[in-house]
Image 1 (cartoon, rainbow, N blue to C red):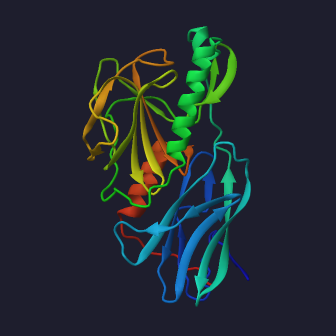
Image 2 (cartoon, rainbow, N blue to C red):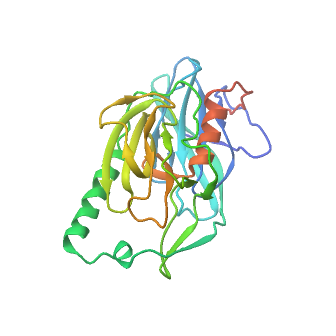
Length: 295
């Protein structure tokens, strides 16, 4: 059976199920927080958007709730999307539907000039290297650790000026190649880079494009990324705490000058790290009134 739950300026109550969204309209490249209140005889399974399904997890600070994050792809076009909440009630599978409006982020373009061999490498060994590094990273980002290491608010890795925001279209040497998948922090001299939350180090590697890189798994499909480092301070497999120094900023990889590239991967997708931190801190660690949805 299909039950439609509309979340715009009104609150609908259907059969006592409480389903909360951090926002009902969201730009491409951003994150949406979904919160579900536990109910007797109801087993929540997944939240589905399009072809992607996201598992729901135990809320880290509220035992009466479950939650998940929905990453909105940078490539999503403006439209009304359907979020489907799948659950079992009295053992029978059921679902409720919510409408989410995707808006255009209107991201700006950014022109960058780098060595041509960093834009279109021709060397066979470099091509194989970048393909291997890409597969290694994607395999990590697509792994959802069932345990969460997060038990307090996220912090920023650096307290310096942001020099390039998430989402800018990247024009390398006159050719549109990609978009900026993270946030760049100024770091003209080597600065200590802090881990944004508790987690497990799952990648410490020198990579062709990202340079010296550290990736931390925070559990539940959330990964933080720290690129272009000059020095490592942690090892692969190490458990780290929020605020722990992961390395020093630098200018390794495809880069025009020293800085920190900081990113967040959510459900395998790159999302705006600053917006993710804001949404996570507000919704995971702050009590708020719930909206009610009814079946």
